[in-house]
Length: 507
Image (cartoon, rainbow, N blue to C red; front, top):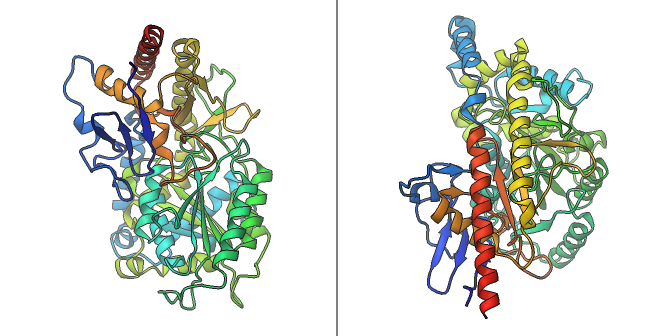
């Protein structure tokens, strides 16, 4: 009789349940195991640490890191030499920085991002930029500065969700099904009708019984009623890109319900055409407008305090995917009032602007045009070629087994990007949890089953959430490993499907 497998999805961990034991599937996107807050799973070493030496070398198609081959080492070395050769630069770079961040980087980012998004840079464009310590660190600072665990009614995260965002929400007091809720993703990026209905219900239910806030926002901040978390371009994990019409509708919805949209825009500059190209050059494809630009164009809302304009959407940017995660440098694009409020975070006021030294080096890469050249000649071509290779291997190895794959971001756009491919297994076959466990045990292959991307205990509709989906990453491993990984995955899936057929047939 065939074993009965179920996958219990947790944003912070996934448990594969057999009749005999529970096996936690923890994150290996960082050297430390993921938190299991809100999960019944016991925290154990990550799969990467669990993997024992085997004849087959480990292939990791879960890890969402840039390949060492695309890191701009020589450019950073040159930038560091320039910084440390000029006392006028290295002295402020090594001191506590101003609250909003290294001013030359703010100015360089305002010019660069204005060109990328085709937004006319006004005279105060740098006032719309706050330098951060990266997208994750910044999200924690935003939640600490602009939310209150009693006054703010909850976080709404589009699902499937980047699962390591959820511990950040939990740390800010938004854990559990009443505080952290999953929002269904549709072909245009987010089911706006579903979200609008739930926001209305939440406001009507809690409007008469609001609890007093723990925090006093002071003159430079405000507290939002809701937080909406999205990755609108090349979403992690699904790869979908939110349409312009849906972006506009989401911003209007946020403005009606006093919500702040935190938009992780980390893949906007990592897109390419899906049509084959022999060119080693991959120019920038102009991304869709940022949610923050759409919001700023609408001016103040009814929820803004007098003489203030905080807005309802921010762009959370990062150099982690463009330069390297270790530079720990990012930015927020928002209204000048929001930027001022964010810069008054207690940790920033005490410790100075995040990433002051690396900000000085990154400024050199932007001002010289070297980062644009590196992205066009190294990073995007490498990702484009690995993405195309992975798709060819999936069609060859997994297509005959009934596996479906999403090949582009926005439907019909012929544009792909990001780091990941989202697969759907055939109905009636093994679940993604079963495939992932067998792949680790037999093939020394690590993949991400879809249950990993469920927001807490969210249930949208009937049936198991994403139990037949899996995410593969093409950015980290080498070209040969990407192909071999898909071959191994095909062997695992084919073997499990064969076992299931034999057992059913022998019923």
